[in-house]
Amino acid sequence: MKKQILYNVLIFSVIGFTSCKHDPPYNGEDICFESQILPIFLTNCTSSGCHNSIDQAEGLNLTTYTGILKEIKKYKPLESKIYEVITDHGDDMMPPPPRPPLTDEQIELIYNWIWSGAPNDVGCGQVLNCDTSNVTYSITVRGILIQHCTGCHNASIASGGVILTNYNDVKTLADNGHLWAVITHQGGYSAMPPSGMLDSCSIHQIENWINQGAPNN
Ligand code: HEC
Image: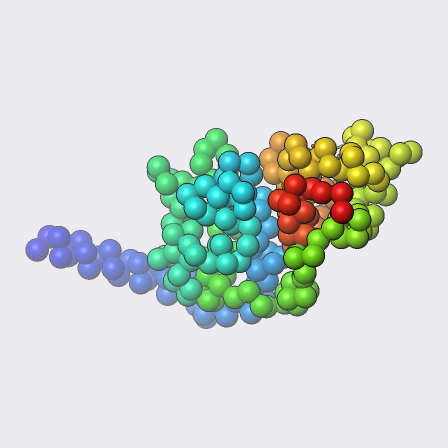
């Protein structure tokens, strides 16, 4: 009997919690997966040994929409594994300590995004035209670097001692993981470019090139 009462209290508090949290219901129309949700995962979950496309810890690649969706139950944040672990304070806590937990704002954003059906297509037009299959150093990667990086990283202005105008130097940074770390804002590295994160298409194109072994093609 006691158990039943406790159970009812629990159910009511869960219902109460979910229904007042979005009153009036949040429609999620202005959440953009590519610019608001994906960067949270790239920054906090995809460093070396974790949930990136190579290491895939626990079989999870959290660098793509499809990969993230595997751990999500659309419209049901409280039943989604991802929401569970980012709000857990025990053994399942993600990111695992000593890494800092997500901020309340990030957690709420993820909650609202799942609650609104975890859409991938809202305000994210450029991603639909993103070609990550024909990535080359000479055209794709060099193009991104010239547009976003080489103004501060060339032979005469080598910020931080880093030059990004020739293949060999870029290759070294690709192989030692620094290129991926700075563009996805991993802890312990400077976030590059300093003005804000690259668009997700550029990040995935660079990722694809790194995964191919960073060839001089
Ligand atoms: C407005 C100038 C500016 C732009 C643009 C810029 N950087 Fe930097 N970068 C810096 C400065 C300054 C440093 C050294 C100080 C620091 O580490 O914050 C640096 C440091 C670095 C480092 C070494 C950091 C570390 O923690 O090891 C790398 C790698 C790097 N940048 C890559 C890039 C890439 C890739 C881009 C383009 C996506 C880029 N940077 C765009 C100014 C810039």
